[in-house]
Length: 231
Image 1 (cartoon, rainbow, N blue to C red):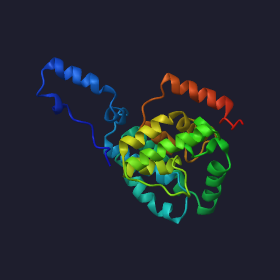
Image 2 (tube, helix red, strand yellow):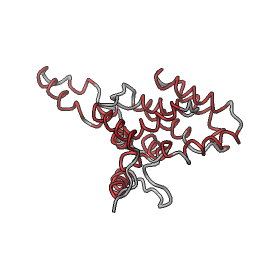
Image 3 (cartoon, helix red, strand yellow):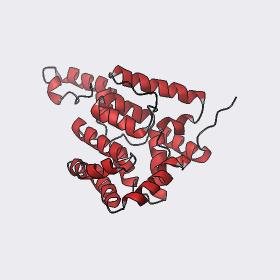
Image 4 (cartoon, rainbow, N blue to C red):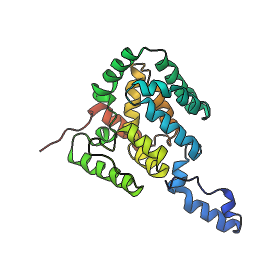
């Protein structure tokens, strides 16, 4: 993927101080700088994203077998993501498979506010959501990834796997564009004390903090819910 690490400080050493400062200012909002706004390296971001992606998938036997690997990925991360991920891993591994699967379905498949489809929160069931999905598919395609017709590209575990395994910068761009949706998924999980809340906390630790526009969108969407299609 093209999600390499940001150019190091040595990139400017050959320039005079003034030019170097101007270069840094021009680069201040590049995809690479936005990618690392959380302070994590690309490798740390990828590790966190794939761990969260796995934790948010249906807890079948494959996920249970992956728990030691997820724990290993988590322990190498900065504290903000590590502690939250390990809390979710600990909570999920204490549960028996049947009750875990039932709670997963109750949390993510039947609650509208537990919806794992990112554009549902920002666009609702409207024509605008179709355009948002097209833009995500275009990002996937630009990285050489074709998504099957049987799944939507805004499914959070799919977006996270794309960011982790294919293109960190484009994946992070999709997550930032749907930052209110991520927060609207985290908040109800916090409210119900969900075992999966730590996974969302860890994901949020990889993203820039909510800005004023994002906070306003979260408040508005929390009050209104997703918009319905009007004809």
